[in-house]
Amino acid sequence: MGEQDNARKLLDLAAVHGFDIAALEEFLGHTIPLPRDTMEPDSSADRIQHSIDTLTRWLDVLDMAITPPMIRSAMSQIGHEVGEALIRYFVEKKSGQDIDRDKTDCIITYLCRNPRPDGRTSPESNEHINEIYQAAADAALEFEADLYRILQDTTVPHLEDQHVQLLKEFEFLYHEVQEFRSFDQLMDSGILGKVKDLKKAFGESFYHPDVLSTVAIYNVVFGRKFDALFHEASLQIKSFAERVQKEGGSLLNRVEGDITVKNLTEVEEDKILEQDYTGAKEEFRKVSNFKKVVDQRKVGRIQPPGAVPQGAPNAAPAMAAPPVAAMAPPSGMPGTREVAPSVAAQQSQARKEEVEVLAVSASAMMDNVMEESKLRNIQDQIKNFIKAADPKGSYIVPLSIGTIPLSAAEAEAFRAEYGTERSFRADLAQSLIGLNIVGARMIQELEEFHRKENSAYLWKPHADSLTYLINKAAKIMAIADQVAEVAQQRGLTEKQMAVRGALQRMRAQIAQITATLQQINPSKKTAY
Image 1: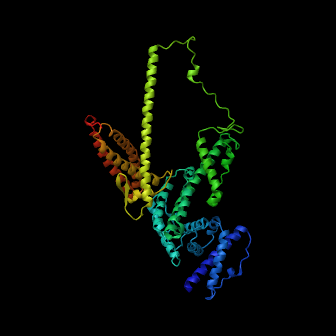
Image 2: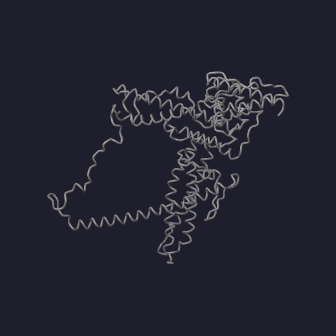
Image 3: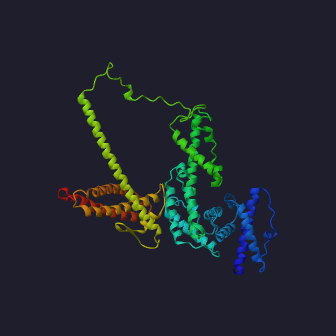
């Protein structure tokens, strides 16, 4: 490291040290005794490296005492020089610890929102950033350029190929955030934990400017949405509590369970938002729960004090009405007559037919279970191949029926793991997966059908399977059409083309199968 680099690094470490001590003293309410070498680090040529090493070790200790909420609270009291020194410090440290990543998250979000007066425009002033993804992407590029300026003399980590792909997840998250319509929906979505796991998945690459800028802009977008929905929820909760009191209700009236009207009036929006998310998590959960209760009770009645909550264990259940058969008088009593034999015979025949229908339904259900099992097997085969394949190679998947080609978007859908997530990206992946596995099964069954089409009956199970697959495909295609329309509305041309291409292939397959099945003539089949 050159003399000039050493001087810059010592200045950064001194700035970070000053920031940490000020944050700790504010938190503790008293001054902190400091090691002599850290108070006045020696910058002479023969002692500067010693000063750097000493400050670095001492900052390792201070880092254990400084928390992300303390960083967040102190950021508003510092200048741009200290903020930039902080980000250089954490980028060079490249820590894999959650707490250091969270601190870096706070710092880059502050720097993104508060650029130098002579620099770029703050994304906070961009009214379209929460409406148009391209506006957010452009803001990320501007902040990325700013970060490269800040980090020009800093060694940044390499951005791995898999992390470049991982960055694309933020586009899906952006659209998911825009779909939230209420605060309780946001809290129940699990998106907060999902984003935290995504950030962790980058490893050291998290400290690359491309990742930091994308994360910062996402934080701005999500923060806007979070604050707006939280504010809306708080207003609805307090308005509901006021209405109850105006209508003669008491603060002690129960809304549901142990939640009273008084609890609703005690929601302090400003104080909650001033806290770090980790510290206020329980308050956010409470507000989310209040919002659900208010939505349920807007048209209901509020229980007076002392009333037994609905659904309480000691509430007496309503008397169940006796079955009709138990109320009918026994045969031979007044008001009854014997059933004619012909009617009894008809009832017996009806019961027999009902049993036969149930047997057919059970058989059809079993067939459906088997078909779904075969589809899952195909899906697992493709997934396993894709996960083991070279991400840069072509995707020609070998199966027992031959091979099937996949586009890059389709391969990415099989590689993704969204579980039960309900979002655009999950719908996109499921549509592409569904169309491909049904298409693979169609190829398999059509091959088997052709092998046995001249037999008397061996062809029929394959014809039935093909009919099932056509019906299955119709349901998936309906969803895929909607996904393609959403992609078009959002300007996601590549994703729209991927879905449209898969739909086109499926329609061609269905047309081929339909033409084949229409040519079936059982009277000409050979018995063997």
